[in-house]
Image 1 (cartoon, rainbow, N blue to C red):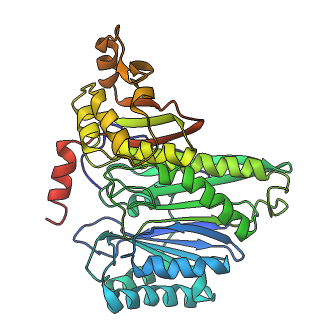
Image 2: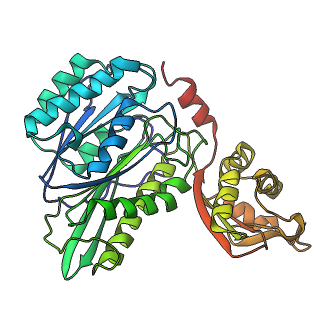
Image 3: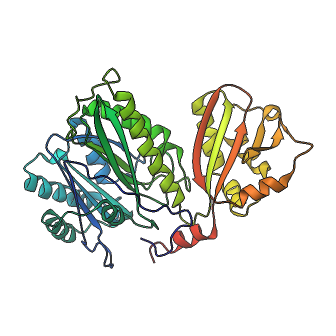
Length: 408
């Protein structure tokens, strides 16, 4: 993790222990550092699993194997390697993943398809099999650790560990969620350079868990961006051990399904916001809300065009209320928009309405809003009922410094 902490950093929360989930961390020395960089999580037999993965076509073997294994719906083990993404590494990279899977599966006495592996870090360097073998062996016999230690171990350029918790009542039974995530750059929809893991003691059928995770991801992880780049390794996995003892959820007709879905969405939203707040070089957290679009999907695409615009992001970094850049981003999005119906605002204050600047517009309160750590940009297209909110951060000199020196 970086020594410099983001000014938007959030203290690591108290996360509940989840019955049937046992995390461990060790130092495999994937890089020349003294920190833990291999995380192993043992899961109880029968644990349901669901996952969403990057759509980057140059994805890692970890993503390919994980995507294939999700269909069988059960998990016993998770291994996360930090410091090396093992992406674009050919057969050597795949062999390293298969070695880890076989090693953990033999220890647990389970099929290889029930062991999931993620790796994050530099692209194009094969994961060293000797270090992976020794690291996994150490992890399998190590003492369990807490959630914060696991969150730190999965990190790369992150400046603070990230976690989230939630709970829900299902038929009179309280179920709990604990989740950790890493990510601070190469963040964009279709997932990001983001590895996220959600653990719950709820009993739920794998197919329904997949349905709910996909929906929650679409409304949260696929609504954040730091730099418009989509990573080769993005993965979010949800594990449900069933240890809470509730009647298993099989669909929305199951009592408590709505509460579970809401809690899962809340956890995903918390995690997504934390990733943006640790955006590389970020000084400001930006919410872009687009209303009046022809559809929700159109609103989100317009929101992302604004959130990904270097001109908009640098204006916010400079605390410049240059609403003309927002107009530009709306116009380039390729979505239905009418210049003469467009309205733009910051922090609840409209700067332009119906295609023209307000005659009594006072920039002073907008300038004051832009000096804060959290900035709101509002757009009303005046065309329909479509609405979406996306989240991003400003673009600063810090982002350039981090990425220019990433391999140094």
